[in-house]
Image 1 (cartoon, rainbow, N blue to C red):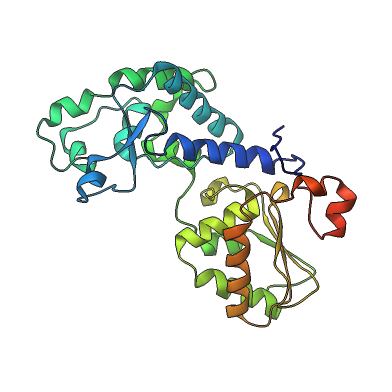
Image 2: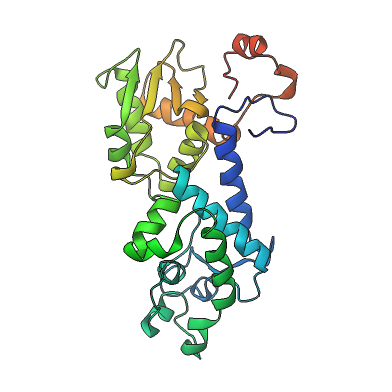
Length: 284
């Protein structure tokens, strides 16, 4: 279980997912660790994958083994990790050979494409070694790079139709006005805002792909009106929705909650379950 210092969350899954999610974000933070770096295309602001990362040739072996184990954990448990890694990274993970044309997907201006093809060979071997601690890496040859990427990371684009198809309603139906306001509010958000919503509701920022969906989203209508903020239960992927009067109000209240509350709330001063319930907060 995970325990957050200074916060009153009780881990039934939500804190654990939030820990993994934040860990991966820090691993991809520029200058935090000598592990990943932005693609050269990102630095030059040209070509594909400008929002992606690649392994550094000098990445520490122990850190690469750890990242491989994290990826194996994601495959084993279904706890998706928000790695932003391109095909250039995943191709050798499944045992396939990179091609010369793959270099342009991360570095359009490479002066020595052949050198870039093998620059991260050493850290990749270490990462595959860590991955092999949890999954049989020889079986990855049966998968495409996209299959493995989806099993580890899910989809960075929040598909609202997929979310809607996997929603279960409590104390309401799909025709309830507040529910219709809710979906209209999400439709008006960009993908980054939808990721914040997902983190607030499920302590992760990626949805699984359609064929690997295991946990339905629970949308529960509660009392109160425009003056109230929504409440989430990250352990159970549940969102408590007040009876908002319009999509505009709904959107404003959701964005306030997901922007300023994050995924886990509950200060240490409200550490007991009884106090949390009096504040209309859930322990997770």
